Every structure is written in structure tokens, then in C-alpha cells.
Image (cartoon, rainbow, N blue to C red):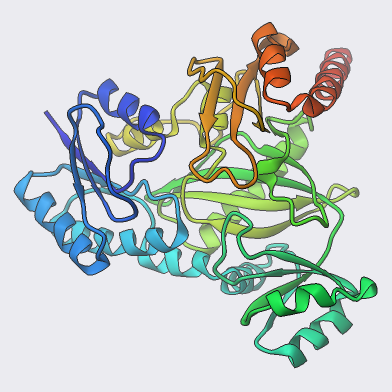
Length: 392
């Protein structure tokens, strides 16, 4: 039996399913949080980063590990895990994850954009500010409403909207440097999850994340759709940009290419996350293909098309009141470990453009029925696009 080592217990149901399909023994070594009871898997935990890397190396040697899969969900841990790749390369053991070069590039949003811009890939314009003077220069250049981000922030943590026209003095004490200043742009947010291995790049269906907002509102707190009915030509353009971006930052594993979609149908990249992200379950349900299984299949030499087609539309949105914890192939209820913004999220299939009765009930129970009209509008738009394509 093959043995595979993962570095984070995250979406463990999907990971276990992928390992069980191939009859692979699962070993877990993680640094980010103490393990809890997880059936009978071998789990090791080490909070010290240096000792964690040594523990991974020892486990690889002592357990005769056949491959390592970096499943970390935070950018700093992706950098940490990239050191494991170097050890695996020395040992001749396959590693599913990012190289240190890619992890460091994508950890810094300013560096990421500089490299993409150098490669003639459209990016959201920004300025790096180290003090109040440089922030003032950025405001003069970019406009009165700007987005302030940490160069190495994720999930909207530390992000702030600064509106100089409203004299946002109350936000001034919150500003810490260095920061990246971007002009607020009215656009729709999109992401493409892409897997890179041995110079090949595989795209999963794009996820639509709604309009940009001036309210510090992260995309996780909105309705998300996979895929949105934008048409095949536009979708192919998204894939082309995503692949170019993955090549530019020298991706060797999973990346989420985040983009802005403007009214004139132009696209600009806002950032790149060098890991599997929060849309992982969405793209899995939409394609009926587990991304963890997909990664292992590529490792085993199984072939695949460059673009993975969607089989159905999947929606995802937060809920705010307690609801039943459903975990089926059609509806998945996840309770958040950090419920500051919302209690959890619902991921659901819309087979044949129909809202399941169970989903209606969950939306009202979870006090999230505000998303119902958006889903109904989505279904109407999808139906119109299908009629148009039929006529063509």
C-alpha cells in the first residue's frame, strides 16, 4: 500500500475520499493547530516551525512515505511547506505543492503584481506605501477612495477602505505600514483555480464572487457561483489569463488566480493565492471531481484535459442562524471555526436550474434568505443564455 503525507487537516472528508479511492495510507503532520480525534489516521503535531520541518523529514524516512501533499490553507504555511519540497526533491519523492520561489512570490501581493506586469499580464494598479507621505502620494495618484491591504494579508484580514472625501479620520489609527494602496474599482470578482505540474496547467471552472464593495466585505460573505453563465468565449479568455499568470509566477501546484471583471469585459488580476482555497468544495461539486483526487491522479500519470468542465451550477453563501449540519453530495453545510463574520456557509448544487426544497428551508432557517432573489436572477440569466445558444 502506498503512503501519502499531508500537512494540514482541512476538508478532511475530501482528502480521505481521495486517499481511499487509491487505497493510500494517510499520514498527517501539521504545524498550525493541535489535532483532534480523526478515526485511526496517524497524526503528528509540532508547533515549532523548525522542529515541524524536521518531524516531516523524519516521518518521510521512518514511514517510507511515497509522496507528500501540501494541504496548508494559509500563505505563511505554504512558504513553510515549500521547504519540504526541497527535501523531497533530494530524496526523489514526489511533492504536490508550491516551490519556495512561487510561495515567496505569491506571499507578497506587490511582488506578485510586479512580476505579472513585467510579463504583460493585466493587473490592478497599486502602490507600495511605507509611511504617511507615500500614502498621501498614492491618494493623489489613485483617487479619493482607496483599498489598503497588507502586502502579505489573506481572506481580507487587515484590509480597509479609506475614503478621503469623507475624511475617514477614525480609520487613521488603524493604518499600519507597509501597505499596498489600490484605487477602489467597481467590478465583479472572479477566481480561477488552476493546478500546475511538470509545466502542465489544468483549469477548473471559474467562480463568480459578486461586485466589489466599499464596506470591507470579503467575498466569503457574499453569494458565490460556479460557474456563472458568462458564455464560452469569455470563459476561455479567463483560462488563458489564468494559465499565463500561473506560468509567470512559476507555479508548481495549486493556485487561485483572483481577477476583476469590468463592464467592458476586460480582466485584471488582483492577486494570486498559492494554494487550494475556500472555493475548493464548490469546484468539486460543480465538476463532480475532487481536486485532491485530481492532484493524486496527475501524480500517478493519469491524463486529463487542460480545462475541467462544469457538470452543474453550484452556489455558496453564508448563514447566520443555526441549521442542520447536512453533508451530502448535493448540499454541504459547514460551520466556521472563526464565526466573526457569519456562522458558516452552505454549498449546494442547482441541478437543471432548480432550487432544491431543502435549500429553501435552510435559507429561511439560517436567516440568509436575502440571497434567494440573487439565485433566482442567476437561474433566469442561465436559462436565457441556454435559449440563445440553442438558437445559434
